[in-house]
Length: 347
Image 1 (cartoon, rainbow, N blue to C red):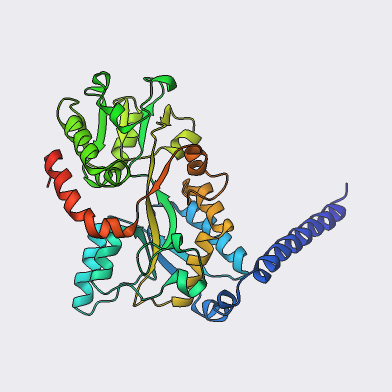
Image 2 (image 1 turned 45 degrees about the vertical axis):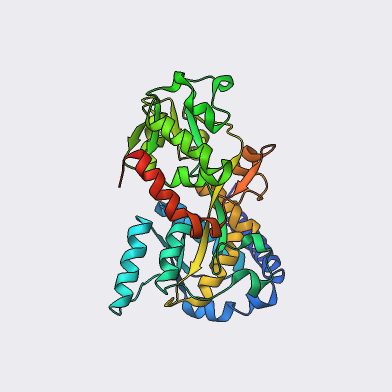
């Protein structure tokens, strides 16, 4: 084959690919509700959006950015940054009192942190579900758009140390004497707080006391430490974390089939001082769309439990699913966290 023919074929392939992408984008744009399409001109002028939320590497962010641009047929820059959410929220509230700007368009977080932002007056009063006629279950508090269902009450186990038939199938199974000294938990009371909504406070207290007492569970500094040290085989069981990504990579770990499945949602919150409000809203709509859920699942194994063919949907199938509401965290979360922190012996 001559170089000229090769160039012609290569050019044709590029053209066909471009046509395919254009057609896909055009179809997506045609399907957009009018109130979403109306945001596109302003979003193009804004040109960028900053989201504080998940810890992602540059390649993961680029993949999400490409999907966002393809979904709307635009070319904007997506910046996703992260850190310690409670500390960041407190820092922003303090800074706002001194007139500092947040520099963030969307805060992507859980109810506990969102409450700090709401009380500090930093969240824009945008009611996603009301404005866009979305199902009420997509709300997380008055101004949050439910983006994915967290796994802070999950249990994982090392498959080299435990056979599937012997894995915990309920939270009470964690109190089996055979797990004594072999369970790791993060230095945070929130997993117990979320669990308590799913199974009742009394039973959750019993389990927490059992783990911290006779079971001699080890408290580790961070949530990722629990996952890493279960994968390494130092501990057989971990509470308060999932391992969907590690399972994909072939690590010797699995999610214990604990029933009920207690989920702790995360949501998008638009900041009141957002410099790119149109793109902030478009980011939210994209994030809950099938295209957005697909790319979040691909890069981070996170999704709403009702999103089809996702890890969390497959895991939850056939089990009782309990989604912890924002209102519970708002009314009971702080009190229960204090109680479980006392049981754990942490401040």
